[in-house]
Length: 300
Image 1 (cartoon, rainbow, N blue to C red):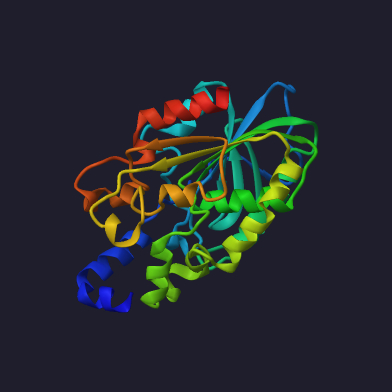
Image 2: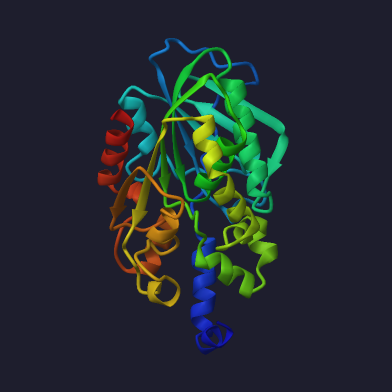
């Protein structure tokens, strides 16, 4: 591998940039900070929780706006469809901000790109148990990229009998790893990308642990539907690192590594910050077909 990179030094720098250019979390909106349970208005209400992905630029702990409200605005479309939407942010203070004005927060947690994914998953699992402890609640989760790893860890290690989990949509989550994590390690970028990047290397202890415990997610939440969204855009650098269809950062094989109930493959890219380097294509968040499919899955 070293000789290949040395032959293309400019490409190595570019690939490193591509790995760093991942999507940013969403800024929390106004609302009361509370650890008290969410007041569920009716047992028929469905709450959709949105979990963003890896964002190394947030090592300062300051969340950025973007992911779920950018592009075709998944968040607004879900609200218009009648869902109560909660947006997770785990860089800086851990928060879940809901469209009904409720906000859960943990000011004792301060996340950066150097926070182990399992620590974030634990925060998510604890938060969900506290938020939905007042009564049985229908819950769906939509998780992007590393957010899918956060979500799966929480489902494997935290059980809440009050959560009636129906759907989990994993958008390009690297269950089998991403080659760009290996590139980051090769280049010695630990001070920039943090430990989360290395945990997303194929075969890492963290990913191996997820794989070994995946059955616990079904034990804790039996009957939930596992849906994978992936991309087969396969941009011009794809042949160097991917052995099959990919979206430029995560391959279809990696996204489906742990199995699935439903699979939808789109000709889109992983994140908007790659647009200037691909010459064509759009992102998952810019494609209304992706939004339509998400609404279809959640409504099924």
